Length: 113
Length: 432
Image 1: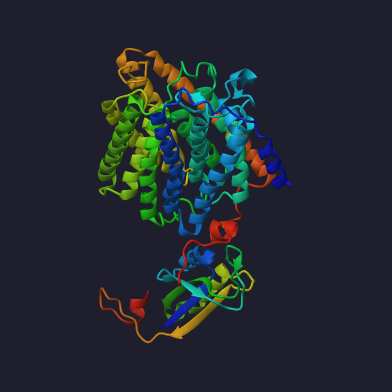
Image 2 (image 1 turned 45 degrees about the vertical axis):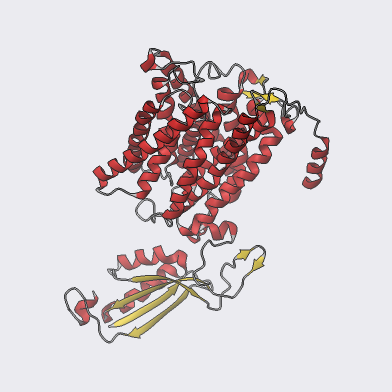
């Protein structure tokens, strides 16, 4: 089991979720985050004060998957959010030790999907 | 260059009369307050709409409302007031001449019992909010520069003519003036007008991406409620101020405005409970606004009991327009401008022809329920004329704007949000 964390551009969220749905990856957690890569992004202008290089808005996706779904999940995210420009984001793969479904008490691969 | 032009014009303005005989200080005091109340409706509208859109677009809505306050005001004092309210018409009564351009001949002499300039500035607030209403239809996708151009052209070519026919022309346009249609505070001039313009706009521009399945709910309902509250209170200036005096007619307008709004809100709550099993806050504020819209043309000629009926009708019609018509026909009227202002406005204009009574102070015309079936016909005429002119000319303005600067934001800009793409600003920071 793996835990996948993807940091993507906020305007790509709908596209990413659609693509994941298509590949039967339904369960996901989404959050609004601030982050910084090497990009400049759209700098915000408050009364002519330009902010460049400081924290910018990103969207974080967190998905727990069984081994068999790792490839397709990564592929879905890259395909739907990648534009070739700086700022597309990153995907991190973490090993997932255990997973529980609270309602039923199932564990492991059963509990994930 | 523009700066120099403005300086030159400001020096050249003509001296005006400050004759104070005939001015009633009570009326003037009330009208000063009224004008301020009507202006308050525009920021109120801004928050009402702003709370209903997604968080990435709230600034664009607020910005568009504030730009209306700025641009319309400037156009109004330069030429708009004259086109709408000059006592000499041109083109067969279509529009006023330029007698009052640059506020020439607009001084402090009485117009009624208040100074002329007060009447002018009171009317300016109506001219501001009418196009601002349309914002709700194209919210979240019309780009800013298209909006600015649309705003100016719409004022001059749609609002000023209709205003001139119903309120401004000495004879009116084919009987739509003083002796014809009853439109106390703007049922046709403001609400049907904006409502139809909204519908036409919605049919011309593209839908928002993801409509209807993926559109997020209102991002800040408390702001929308605040806006609705400001609208309700401001509407007392809108309707009661249209008496142009602090008198019984104004009192009647004040009372019926409040009653209609309350009844409409209540009606919407009941309908919500029946259809959705839950009374919603969004429902009650939308209902209240529908009630305010509907009573607008009738506020000078109907009594409080009629207001109960008119408010209930507004709630029912608005509810059906929003929950049945819109999903059925699938048009993306983002914030239900047609459903609430257009439909409730038409109901109100019609209802005026039903419930008008000469028992109301300041009114001499009776409606159907008081023995005169012909007023309904005149009201229908006014509605139809407004629909035709507003619909056609709005369409032309939109096409012109599309050809010159392009109407909609790019798909990328729409996804990022208009706040960032049009204004490089965000409303809410996440940290600090």
